[in-house]
Length: 257
Picture 1 (spheres, rainbow, N blue to C red):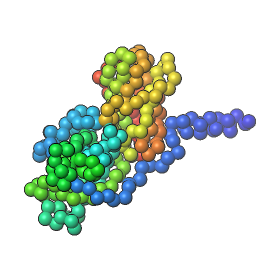
Picture 2 (picture 1 turned 180 degrees about the horizontal axis):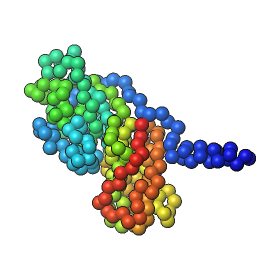
Picture 3 (picture 1 turned 60 degrees about the horizontal axis):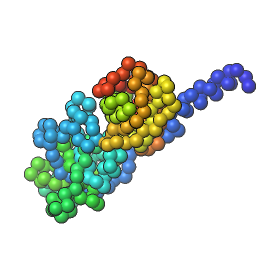
Picture 4 (picture 1 turned 120 degrees about the horizontal axis):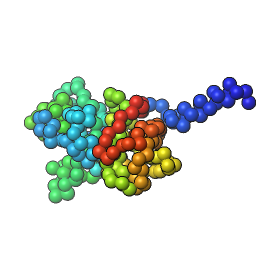
């Protein structure tokens, strides 16, 4: 084989090992649901949450967020996904604002309340598709006194500033890695970690957007291989230096589309 051709082939193979052959995330169709709000006028009550993003102000998620009902949350698989929501003015012209939309990120879980019927307080009970939105986001599409409104939603690509971030918590043989600031599909389907002394080790979802490994990786530079829910894969080579410590966050230059 010609040396030039061999070099080109090697470069193609290297690129294909980092990027999967999947185009950027495309919006879904429109679906009917309902929406309420929580967290106060400044959304301070939405901090933390079942996805594990912590302070939503400092991590870049802001006040346009939502807690998802069981039917949408998927035991954390939906964490980070983005939804464009409009109030269904035809169904409720009294409490809906006409001709406006808001895009929110899934950051929390709205638990079911089986003590109340699905159509009277048990808004997040299965099989209802329901968004409990941060109040500032909800008030972009609805009138406060309405309380609950019918909506139409579609899943849309997430737009983020900068690259994917990894926050490492845990202790010795237990690494708990929070994956945040994911653009495109927003949510992670699978993930692996590789140290300088190991091969690729599969990680499992612990809770929300937190993935765990039970290997001893202290003192090793770490790489992550992440696949999103639409099948895109990126490899973040040596994103974590060998002198890393628990509680640190590492930002990459790579991002999903």
